[in-house]
Image (cartoon, rainbow, N blue to C red):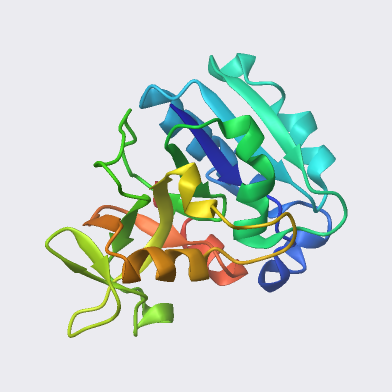
Length: 218
């Protein structure tokens, strides 16, 4: 099983920290954010990771390398000067990810989730890891009903930025810049997106203040 870590974004809300350092290389307790993800995926048995690049991508490539120091293989999907957003970035990397379900991890979250080698139930297009709504997203994103992701109902949850996706989720998409959310919404309407609730430590590192709060917490 493979994984992709999304690391191409400019990190506008993190400026000025991201003016000279790509967001995935910002540090928590002396370690770059992206290394927490790489190490966690490796612990779960994932030995083949794709990282997409755009803003200062060469700095990420230079620091992370080809994976030997983590005991895995790392390849890169370089999007050039303009990032392709979540959907477009994954679609561009599908040739590197293969035909089987793969882990997706947003590079700007910080969490204690335990990855493993898993597939998807027959016919399912994805599996989302959900978390209780943080203060900055009180209205949530989706709901869970009998382990299926549904549109918001009485109890909403926040999408964590972690998922298992099937390449078929991108059927009909074309190369270019587009978000992932509409693909999720289409799969939800068809009842083809499962989910789980994760109650462990998780944070969306979206602002310098949130990054500072994590400094001594892990």
